[in-house]
Amino acid sequence: MSGITDQVIALGAVFEAAVLVDRIARTGQAPSASLSCLLGSLLVTNPARTIDVYGGDDLYLQDGYKALVSALERNAAELQRQPLRYALAMLGLERQLAKRNDMLGLIGDRLVQIEQQSQHFGLTHENVIASFGGLYEETLSTFRQRIQVHGDMRHLQQRDNAARIRALLFAGIRSARLWRQVGGHRWQFLLARRRLLDELYRLMRADRG
Image 1: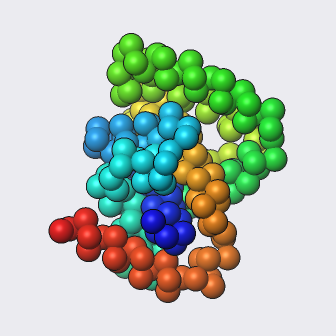
Image 2: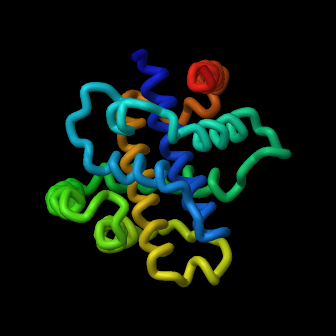
């Protein structure tokens, strides 16, 4: 895969996480396959290819691609404002995390434990999601910049939904880190917007077959 393809896949995953966070916050629902794809990305440490982080297929990143297209096209009618806000906040938090080797080490150690737990219970079991969410709460949510999630309080106040939201924010930040590792930079939103869009449309056409 080319560098731009890797960057679009990783950035699309950031936006996918943001879309799912928004969906849970508003409706209490999220597709289990998409949730599983993103949670699984947290446990992939040495992928041969960027796409392998997401199970070898970007099928479950399509909503993220669409949200990213709307943001890059600056399409006011289709722009998903909350997911865009969450995605940009995750990119910002990743920059802070990159400066904290102590926290990165702690996260790495705890993810090994969560992987063992997931092998026993299954990746989307409530205990595993609670572990992901708890690790996010202990680490990334301690930064001064925190992601405020807005939605229906009936859903936000449910413990399982809160854990899913934290776990997805964690997965989004993992994808933001991957995006930067494969050469992504925030200036791309301005200086390489057309190139990102062209690659997004190519990937979306390919997935439609």
